[in-house]
Length: 239
Ligand code: AMP
Image (cartoon, helix red, strand yellow):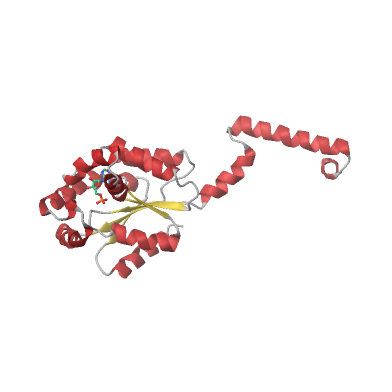
């Protein structure tokens, strides 16, 4: 009976249908605190998003691999190191703040870094997901990132660490320093400081995501293609 009533097209029935739709919508909003019309959009919008953290010590090849991953998976690459260098290049207040820490191979304070990262994410609402490179580097950064993504119905799917030993890193960064124009790539004591910061502060982020079963390591030695294939195999198996 109800079925026939809803399908009929006389005026009273249409008014009845509209009333029922409005009523159901109100009930939904009351219980779930969300507009049902926005629900379908936000679910399809975020359900397919992939957010990855490309992890590893400085010089482990994150930047090189991120560029290739971006092409294959159509994600947005966010490197906090690149963002800081951009700010320094433009002599902004943020750049000036960051410069003093970067020149010494130290971490830029969390509040500066997190704010900058959030701005970059907010400025790109329509992407399929992000590859975070060089972020998070501390537990407070990781916690802020998780909270921030959660507020957007998103999450980190995986942290993938490229494993490369310290001596290989120093060799690679000094080589890169010949052309990168980065002062922190040219001085071995600063490079060693950056590795020390990674081993003491940043590597804990691996354990942080491990507790949620999201951390993975892959061998960061080999050709660019070999490492890329290892990364893709891992990403494709995330499910
Ligand atoms: P990168 O290009 O990732 O090697 O970063 C270069 C430098 O930028 C680092 O040595 C830090 O001084 C600074 N930096 C980049 N990302 C972060 C971050 N997430 N937290 C704090 N400092 C950062």
